[in-house]
Image 1: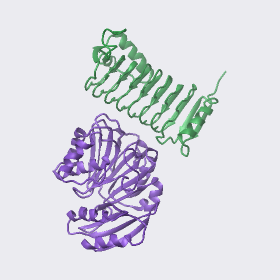
Image 2: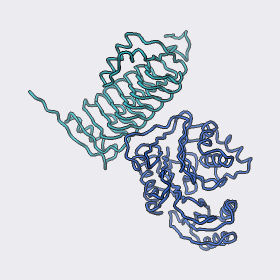
Image 3: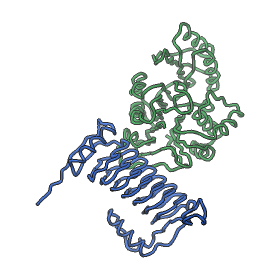
Image 4: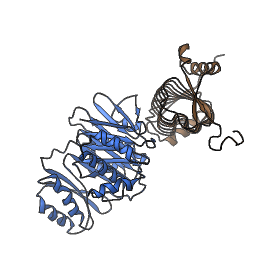
Length: 233
Length: 305
């Protein structure tokens, strides 16, 4: 039996974000794949979309693309503004271009992939999930992160892992400087296995010897503000 | 929140920068509904020592003649026009001739003494247009679509710390050096630390608005032979708070972002055009590109022609 994919297109040109998002939520119940044309870097696209639908944004998106999503697979064929994937819980947000500040901010789960560079504070306060940056990631990436890996294939900016509480930042390029409570460790075989699996899933194919060049940023303390005598010290 | 933008044509020739900036600001309208403004450089075509005055006047009998009398004490009025605005105000624009730039600020201060009159700006190499309301309404009122120039900066304002009126609309101008203007998104939290030394040097502040403080700071640095890039770099070290601002000079534009990168700034350029803005949506109005650079915290960018 052949099941054909049900696909539909929306033209965002003359619509505001609220109108677009209402339409997306309605169509996501009937269709497997939605193509959003002429997004023109509008803000809040796909906010709160909670269906397992594939959404292709044919251009750039503005601030908070994919905020609070659960389940959808969103591909942005351009750049995005600040806070892509903010607070998402499940799903995938794949950005073909670059991202502004705070990509993957506060995510509880799912995966955010930025194929090119990301701005400052990538993955800030993320609780779980995965953030991958194909290029460089800026100032204070991983600030206050509480879980999940951030994987940066380029360089990472100043104060990387500032006040990191949980989780790991893997960096293939240079680390400009570390933030408070951050330290670097050598990666091990288990890390390499995980990295290979995650990166190949999202189309990043590295040479074997490149995996040995990753650096790992982790917290010095799990309770940096309350001291070693605290419950989890 | 506020939206800021700048665009430069690299060939130094006249281009429809008024139209470009109108489209850029309309794309940033959602960042600030209170007022909007433009500095459009390079298209005025004034003779040496000629200046364009841009004066807000409340409509009441005799007041315009009083303004003209004060101007005629120091200069003939070569050309003039009246642009109707909103809330019982008109904008009186006139071209005057001064012996030197140093006469401009004293003349402005004299005109400002008239009740219900304030000089929005006086310029030689650029045209300032700013008013309250939406970008497209202002564009229609002042025909920004037809304005030609080499480069421009612009602003949409979401007011925070000071009142909404034409004078507090951006750009702000300084008269420490000729024809420097600033548009700004953010707050300078060590405002008085920046303002005090400038006032002690004798620089005149007309408002408590931090954008005015920035433009005087940059103009003061330029008057001490800093390059625009050096002035912007020094400002990032000296000024605290969340901010991104764009400077326009007769030679180009520049942008600076605070050291924590708490306000937005992106840029794009090709062989012909250099453009900066709060958001990509504005850049796309002037350059069709897939690559947009995020300006890093504490970074500055300058393009001069």
